[in-house]
Structures are given as structure tokens and as C-alpha cells.
Amino acid sequence: MAMAERGRPRAFDRDEALHRAMHVFWSCGYEGASVNDLAQAMGINKPSLYAAFGCKEELFRAAIELYEQEEGAPVGEALECSRTARGAIETALRVIARGYTNPDNPRGCMLVVSALAGAPESSRVCNFLAANRREGEENFKRRVARGVVEGDVPASADPDRVAGFYATVMHGLSIRARDGANASELEHIIDSAMAAWDAIAR
Image (cartoon, rainbow, N blue to C red; front, top):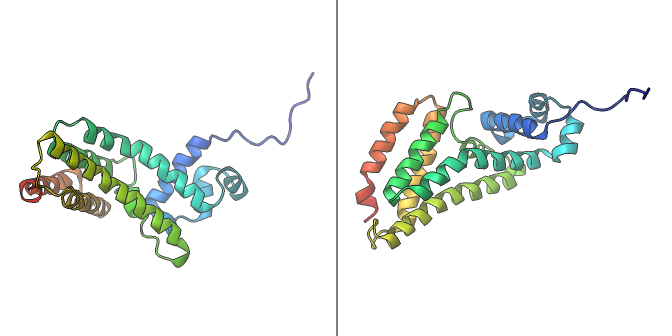
């Protein structure tokens, strides 16, 4: 009869642990999430956290990547599949509004919430988040530029201007959701933003 193995650590589900860490960062921001809070949420001790993910910053970067895969995929699909640039951005904003107010998740956008990292030692994290937010704006810009090529956006339109405006709306929706706005309230804001399309994309 084989001897029972002793000292083997409890099975560790890395994906589940990362999801839990993502929710802590999403709720608290980068600086607001302590390593103790993260380890407790993940169901592991701090040495195990460091062994599995490296430092807190590396864990955060992995959590952001997971967030973008899960929350960003429907937005990317909306931008890609809608027939016109206007329809693509409107659909993307409405998908985003539903995500920001999903009761199963922390409110708002993880990229915006986590931007509340202001200490000098967090500068790399701030730069990382800014680059990720710029990529979201670039996605809008590429879709508007595609609309110019396909003819549903005037050739005189400035894709940078249009993308900058709607990216700002997107970030504002996150703050409003974080402050307690419901999905209907965000939808009304999107209605107003889309009413400005002809004045901006001209």
C-alpha cells in the first residue's frame, strides 16, 4: 500500500485566483489593493502569490490583460461587425454601459478605476494604464477611418477628433457608473453623445 503523500499544497487554480485578484483591483484600484487583500481574496498566502505571479505589479498587469480579454471582447466585436462607424461606436458605448453597471462585477471600468494610482512609485503602472486607454481610443479612430474609406463617414471628418470625443464619453460613463448611475441613466448620456455625431464627424 502506497504511503499517503504529505505536505503537498492544496490544488491551486491559477485562473480562478487571477479572476479574484482582478475583482480586487477593479474595486479598489492599484494602490488601494494591498497584497494582503489580494492574497486573501485569492485564497493563498503571500509567498504563494509571489511564486505564482511575481510582484504586485505583475499580478496587476495579468489582471488587466484578463479584464481586456473578457470585457473588451464584446466591444471589439461591436466595432468590427456594425455596418457603419456611427453604429459601431454607438453599439460599443451601449455594450460598455451594460458592462459598467453589471451587478455581478465592480462598477465602472477597471482601466479608469485603477488610474487612481498617483504615488511616484506607481508611475510605471500609470503609464501602462494610459497606454491601454489610448489603445481604446485608437480602436475608435480606426473604426472612424474605416468609415471614411467605406463612405459612411464624410471624407472631411477628423478621426482623431471623433475618437477623442467618444473615448472621453466612454471614460465619463465609467465615473458616472462608479458614482451609482444605473444603465438607463448611462443610456441617456449615450443618446446625447450620439446626437452630436453629425456635428463632430463632418
